[in-house]
Amino acid sequence: MLWFTALVTLFLLGYLLAALLRPERF
Image (cartoon, rainbow, N blue to C red; front, side, top):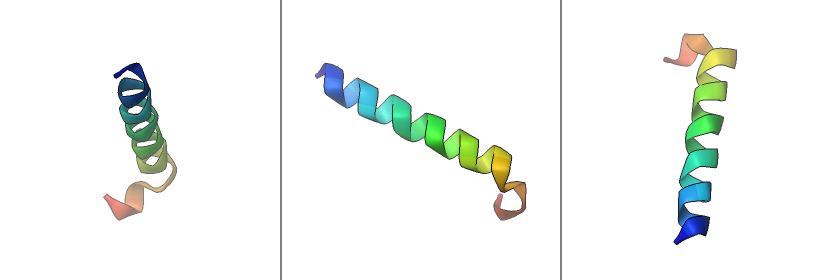
């Protein structure tokens, strides 16, 4: 189940990074 936690963490980090790089979409 550790891989699932890592996958969710990477997804959330990528989403936050995209929000910081493209704030006009949010």
